[in-house]
Length: 165
Image (cartoon, rainbow, N blue to C red; front, side):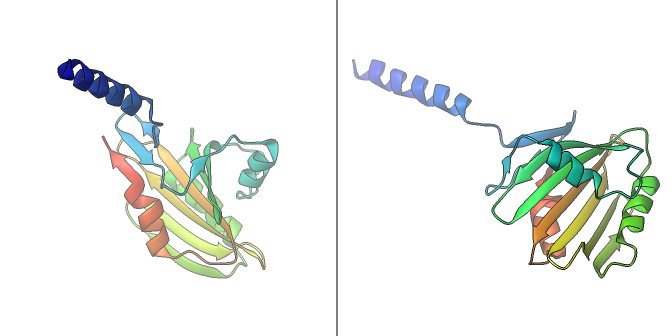
């Protein structure tokens, strides 16, 4: 009788464990982005799409498609995926958008590019562009009001959350 109770309890735990929400966003077959605890995936609206498109100078060419939008009390993280484009083209577009802005941080490495600047007097934007081993290009754009995010934020909430499966 006790054994049945333990088996029933074990079975319920397994079922409940299987029902917990997945906190990963698949980026490609072998790579995922683990959503930080204080963020949640939100349904995008037309306003969100327009805001995302405002990050680019060339509004006609849709080479970075909004893939997912994450929200927390302080930030929006837009995750875009590049189609039929190159790392250099995306980087150039971001640099064009940052012209005549107060650049707070800029870093270029082999397969990633980070830039932060004041979008206006109230808002800061940080872009983190990353090319995965598969060649897929992802742009993480963090929009926040007031506080400027530094490289520590990008490392903790973006870079370290990209997991190779």
